Amino acid sequence: MSVPTLSNIVDGRAVASRADTGIDLIDPATEEVYARAPISAPEEIDEAYRAAERAFAHWGRTTPAERQLALFRLADAVAEHAEEFADLESQDTGKPRATLVADEIDQSVDQLRFFAGAARDLDGRSAGEYLAGHTSSVRREPIGVIGQVTPWNYPLNMAVWKIAPAIAAGNTVVLKPSDTTPLSTLRLAELAAEHLPAGVLNVVLGDRSTGTALLQHPTPQMVAITGSVRAGMEVAKSAASDLKRVHLELGGKAPAIVFADADPERVAEGLVLAGYVNGGQDCTAATRVIVHESVHDAVVEALAARARSHGRTGGPREEGILYGALNSAAQLERVSGIVERLPAHADIVAGGRRQGDRGYFYEATIVTGVRQDDEAVQEEIFGPVLTVQTFRDEAEALALANGVRYALAASVWTNDHARAMRLSRDLDFGCVWINTHIPFVSDMPHGGFKHSDYGKDLSHYGFEDYTRIKHVMTYLGE
Image 1 (spheres, rainbow, N blue to C red):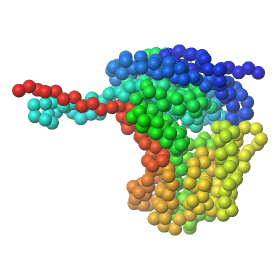
Image 2: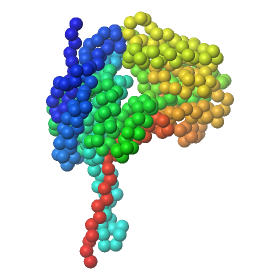
Image 3: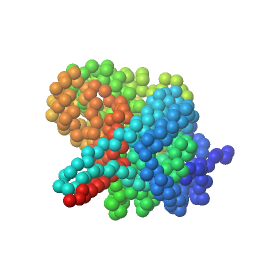
Image 4: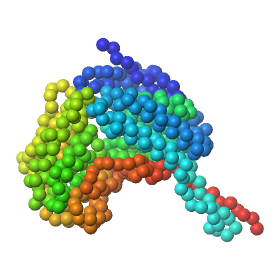
């Protein structure tokens, strides 16, 4: 059976690729091919960047009010097509269709609207005389053309996180979505072509080699990705050779520290959601439960019961499921492999198996008895797997939590306010939740430290990352 071939979106219109190679898009719930995406040739990346350069000559000089209005209109268009976006996202990712609008599409609309507002809220030092006879002022300007690559776990959300602040600041964009989940990004670009000038947002399809070529291209003044640590290091190295600005969001291994005064049932309710939503394919997902030894058994029992009752996986149209299939056969193999390689001292108390023989489904899994240097504790699994460790005192809990190379997100579960404040200070993570885990809002920054990333998504901090600062000094005369 023939399947449709997707096109790039360049200079405000769909452009069929001239490449003779492509990628089959595979439904992760059924393993059936439903479309084909081209692996764009280098000259097609060139064309996209030329379109972005032409557009920047005008877009970079528009007023904040003009950019705000255009982004508000794009946000309204996404809201109007919310059900369509949910269908596309569910097709690409296998996510539960029933909750996609509320969980993800509405968030994308809110993020577009937030950055539309941010376009008219540029902070800067007031003009003044810092040198006698001279007045100084500071301009905050767009950087220019931005190259961006987005991942497969939240295709629409991640595209919006990248393009909204860049475009609001007056930049233009060439973006490559993940090779496995391009549909919603293409639709976003189609709607953008109706509300933004041609060339402001361009989308080029392809594989890892396409992304590398896009990020190493000489045109962009800044490159931004959400991806693996390996990919981030490669991007940083290539960008250094051309002194490009770099914005990286690379991954996480979030601890959830549970003290003896926390309610095990409430902890289980929060961490099953935070650990298994999107199949654990979330860089802020709760992955390492670090629990006081006195309540270990009670917390594990509550987690296992909750995982079995509420951590269900299944097809996108099934009722009562928390998460759908994993992204791909490769991701299923990765998750399965880490669980299969667990050392003898580890125990699987829930899940631990692929579900069914069709689709990339994996059961909600809980592993106890792990040690700090185990692969399952140190490496990002990016699947529905929670590990459980014990601690004796606050100092040990902090050492275990901080003892990984990632530093994106963490949570603390306790009724002791002073303890929560101490740990929120000492935890080496970009976001610390207290008695909750995983909620975020457009107004607050998302980003980490160490091997997780540098730069911020969302919030005014994310907006400022896509601007540059210029000092203007005027001689006042004698």
